[in-house]
Image (tube, rainbow, N blue to C red; front, side):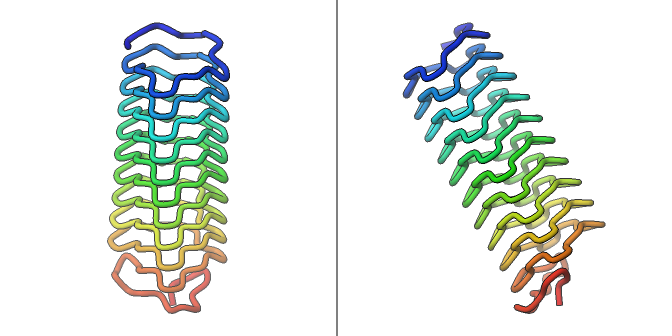
Length: 215
């Protein structure tokens, strides 16, 4: 707890349910490590390598993952509320049912990530890449997604109520049944997007055959 492990090689380490809150793990190699159930609240993991690590059910509230490598990291049911993930690489990460309330994911890469049923309420995803991601039933309530790339992702029945998606790219995205009530869609791109039964900012429900525009 509160230890300095910065720059260490902890690849494949067994750290299940470890108490690492407030610890300095910046620049640490934790690739393939088992951190399931670990307490990483307020830990500094900036520039660390967590690729392929298991962080299921871990707590990392207010932790700093800036510029961290989280490719293919298993983060199911992890608690990342208010965590800093600026420019983090979460390509193909597994974030099903994860909590990212008010987290900072600006410019983060989530290409191909699984965010199904994840809670990203009030999260900052400005300029983030979520292309080809799976985000069915995900909660983006009041999230910031300005200039974000959501192209070809699956956002079936996702909640975008009150979210800001100015200049966002949703080309080819599956938005069936998604809720955009009171969202800001200024200059957002919906080319080829599937919008059947989606709810538009004016509370209009799109017709089932809607593609590219809300009919």
